Image (tube, rainbow, N blue to C red; front, side, top):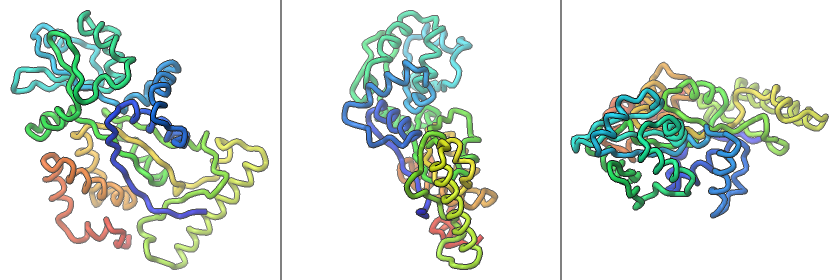
Length: 321
């Protein structure tokens, strides 16, 4: 049995296909199979099997300059899960994940755009920094360009995605996945991952630095669940069957992608004093990093949340709940 602390990590891979692979392999804890060239085959495998949910972690933003194309997009009823922003440069910025774009292009009434993008979608890394679609009427925006726009105008928060990997307990992830609008998730699967070595549990934030009867009771319960889980595995049960004895404190990993405006909404809710203390502690650390990475977007929220010393103590795991 191993007891660890929860944590978060921003995933800022320059290659969207590498991001997709990392998110997908998190589900099965097969990250050891990642190589410099494995992302392309992994993404092709997902497409061939129809596993489109993992591809939602990669986003594309296209700026349309042609007025007729803009009109057709604005009138389209099939642009589900896509965000539209009218820039001061009279461009129409359309942002969405790969799955949203693919579904939109199936019924797209703009042949020149549809054919061009559908030809590009299977290619690897076509929207990375420096790439351009040589088509009249629209251009594919790079992540660097979108980041610059977000610093100058808050309206572009709806077009900028950020992916975060959380290591926390399953109780927290049950709450986290309640956020559904424009949010994509890939979570470690207890059905397929076999914990036949040390089972890991997340230390409750209110137990930090404490050795008392309650802490001993919790540790015993975790040890008993590990013993029962391994016993069931050895008796022939599958991981998906043996997981029935595992508790909410079980360590899990989840990769989450959503836009900056949604992150602001989520962080405001989950950093609230009314939030569960385990969730609040995790999100306070996340908010700190968002403030450092996007100070213009998250500065006001950070100042509002971190206005008390109590919040600082909670972030450091010093608060007793």
